Length: 277
Length: 324
Image (cartoon, rainbow over all chains, first blue to last red; front, top):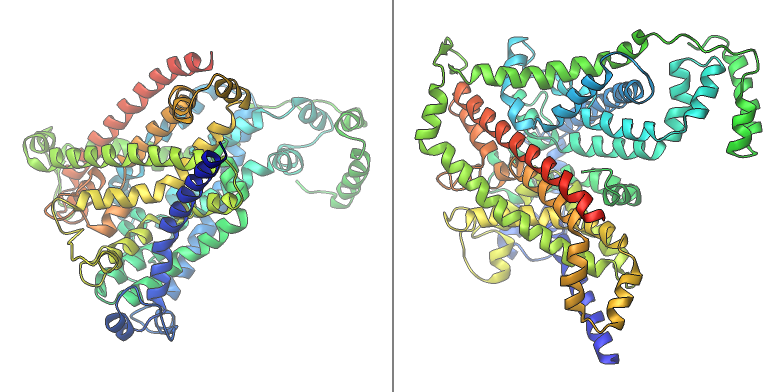
């Protein structure tokens, strides 16, 4: 009995260690490569440690025109912030209306919103491109953010579920007190639903920092490139300079890995609980 | 909205002071003081609150779907004039090889990636919920790939798979053309997708396992059921709602995969990894056949609607069955 327990414990640790190593290996390998000079990379082979390490690839990305990673980072941060602000504000307003107000056509409208959850990005990307071209907005900042900034049906759906779970007594009491809609939202609805809102903020940041297809299609040239588009462009332009490319992928992934580490409890819990897909 | 900020602040402080007593007291004390009267709420407020998102949903989701349907009836190269061709694009797609190829590729990708990430996710979850010392850090590590851009991960793996400069061949001491071999390219792409999804999938299974009461296992153990028997006859059946949810969402997601394929292979070699989304992109922005690309998009959309409706029906029946 004792040996069987030990064996099963060993099996568990084997699975966990293999999972951790397999997960981390590609990240470790890319960072190792990013810290090498192209010469070291060719000379010592892809698995050798970077001795001595160099930040040459990173400085090249930040200083020379060929790297040009500063603009993409600025563009991506701006894009994410604008989309985040718009989506949160407009989604909260809409969810409030759906959850707590009564008006003609509410259920039909909500059904339409839910139905749009079935529309995938790949289906609308060509029509959106045609629309933006027609409007003369191709390769502009607004083309990057406009399709997403007015709220997300998914966020509205989740928020509505949560808003409906609130006690109406408290709301009614505040309404009786003469509080207006915005006041109610700001001082009661939002504070009471902080966990789901924080989760949605994180998900929105992750989704749009990582988004690729739409920025790829709607931007051209370096002015409005996002980090993902710049990474992809760098890879096809310098297809054999892997040390530079791995520095780029490291920069593309690091901010979100840090964000995830800070908020991992919040994120993993909400995913497991089924609040997220 | 914020007239008399000072007064409001004071009110707020007062209220905070009173809230200390707990929620019940709060309700009592929040009750009307200055003979509060319910304001007549016109639907106008609701429509005003909905206006921005309604414009967004209409202009950037509903309208594009409609445009896709319309454009799919035209022959159009983005520069020249549009020419109405009826259902010709659909006919061309169904008789030509590209659409059938990409449907086949997508199906194959799904059939490899979804069962593997579910099985491995379940295996990982069963070990993680044992909560042995150190497992909490592994729980976090395995989710990291899920927060990273699929494009960036694709680029990293493209390097790892390189025949002469890549890490994998150096590690194995071989020289395999992973991404350019017609046979290996799709499994390699699917492998990366599985690698990215396993940790995320395991989160759902961990939550599902946590909901199974320990007493059930105790009873089985007393009855002498082996751990394999317990897995087969108890854990897996009890996890069915979770498994079903994951299967559906993963299938729907894998029908839309693009970024990773774009980074790894771009659809090659000779269309062997050209999934539906890659076909749409290549038709529209490489061949400039916007009409044809839209027709593919419409077909994908209809396919996903069918999948979703079917799963809703199935779910509707299953959930009640499983909960009983």
